[in-house]
Structure formats: structure tokens, C-alpha cells
Length: 180
Image (tube, rainbow, N blue to C red; front, side):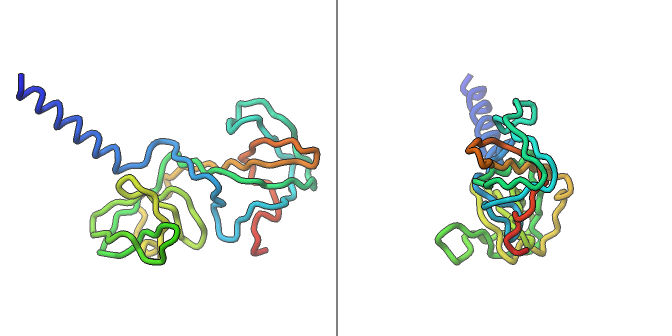
């Protein structure tokens, strides 16, 4: 009986450790704008855009933004349904956190990191052993094993001129890129 409990405990422990290696399904990165110079500010619709009551395409449409109409992009969330995978091919120092200019990780060949959200210029937020880091220059050159299979949705919270607020995944806005 004791042997059975030991085997069950080790199995549970292994499952817990393995679960921490990968990010949870539908990982949410709040407040992120997913490309370089992306900014939340006044945007102009370049086509009709449905705005929903919730972050769900099947939720009721609260209002529609008309082509040429200006709205305020307030914030957003990038939902990573399936992250890209990077297998480290040489030892590198990388992985930055807010408030520190020094890399926090020493990654070794065969380590695996999971790319969560693009930040622009090949920089990402990534998941490694249960924590989220911002990538540095070292990860930019690593081969991405299945980055083409990554699936992300960028939901934007917008407010129209009448003060109504709602969510959209539409990419039909001008003036999102502050570099233009």
C-alpha cells in the first residue's frame, strides 16, 4: 500500500512540474500592444467595426464603429491560445523583468521557452518555468520550432464619442502605430 501511495505521489509531482513548464491555455497579457510603436490612443476606423459587450465574437454587438469614425483605444489583452516554441541552441543570458536592465536567466542548449506575445522588432514576452519575461537580443536569433503554429487574439477595449465602451478583435484601425 505504501508503495502505491509513493508511486501516486511521484506521478502527481511529475504532472505538477510538467504543467509549470508550459503556460496555461489562453494565457492573457493585459495592457500589451503587440507590435513596435503600437499605442493606445485615438484611432480611426478604416472600415466598419463591430464592438461587442464581451471579449467573445458571439457576444451581442454593442455598437458599430463606422468608417472614418474616431474612437479611443483604451487598453487591450493579447490572449495566447497556443504559444510559439523556441528551443535554445546555445547558452545565452536573456529574460528581462521590469525594473532590471540585467538578464535574469542563463538559458542552455535544449531549454525550451514559449513565446506569448510579440512586442515588435522580434522581441516577445515569453514563458519559462512558470514565469513571464521580456526577451532580449539573444532570443531574436534562436530558431522558432513552431512559431507559425502560434495562435493569438488581440482584443481591444474602445470607447466611442458617446462614451460607450466595448471589445473588438478587428484590425481595421489607423493611427495605432505611433511610428507612422
